[in-house]
Image 1 (tube, rainbow, N blue to C red):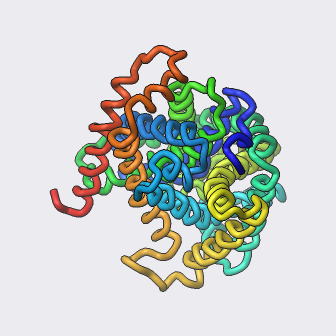
Image 2: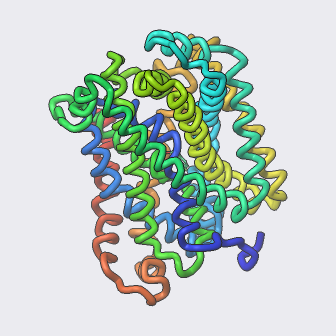
Image 3: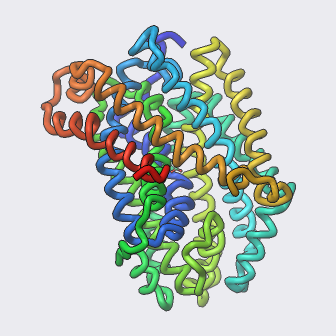
Length: 454
Ligand code: PFF
């Protein structure tokens, strides 16, 4: 597609919701609680919040700047802004990260479909906490069932991507995001009303800094990048569809606040419920698939019809939140192939979908029949998660800081921040300071610390 033909999001709120749709997904409701659980609770959350504020916000605005200024997807943006340099590799790194994330993310997205079905046939009724543990293990290790769901999920993503940006991405985000939010708030209320819920609250709110080590910092930083869809050019690709009146600073703030809110609310659903039924908070990736069915059963034990309605609705919305994120991941890779190799969008999308099915199949089987094949003591699924979230995304973020903070002319950043001089400069200097010094130094320190060099 040529520059002048690029489709834009139809409205400012559409831009915010599409970006928030990318950010809010399994990262908030599935990954955030289990990372919090694995890293000891409240102290992790505080470090996470610092990462969102000091790294996430400036890097998001920088990615918006790259996307809107170049009017190109991330794969090509750096070629437009820095022709003839090696910066194009930063775009390629993002595309690769997006492709790998989509592969394993779709496996978990597929699990949500199984749980919709299970909830729909009233399969949670009268089950005990231990039954949910066994059911999840049997399902996730099955060699066929999760693959069928993976396939269906990627086909749905494919279909929306082929329909295009405005009709597909924007319209769905506008409806889904608010409904998801309301349901989450209702579920927080239910979870907090369970017996022993206070123990879960304490875990979330009372920091124990004695458990903080390098892994906690790396985990919090990786989670911030993953959850905000940063470090791989996803939001920069979306920003290439922003109109010229979209305010980059405000949009970033809205996305950051919405994303963080949903993650913290997800924690408020999951931990009180987990402690209430005596589940360990560090159960890992299975956490929400075991605790949530319990919340529904216990909170509404007297009114089974409510348990039924809420559980179906929750998994439907979780699947839809995952869908708005898989769409954004798919879009990065599809737009890259489309613009870089002159493939039609349909053809580019087919290649991406086929590749992701292959990655997804291996990831899914690595939790079951291929369990014994490991590298650095991690199966393929865990390895992909580690390499993308904890290495590739922060590395991409670091390079974006250097690119926009140091390489790109300050006047370009200023022009994008003020929409060509129409808005006040406001916190522009603070943003540049965070982007040039605070964020890159923090990322480097966390990396060095993890390598055991300090
Ligand atoms: N932010 C999404 C989530 O929290 O579920 C996942 C994701 C989407 C990560 C897009 C990276 C990305 F580029």
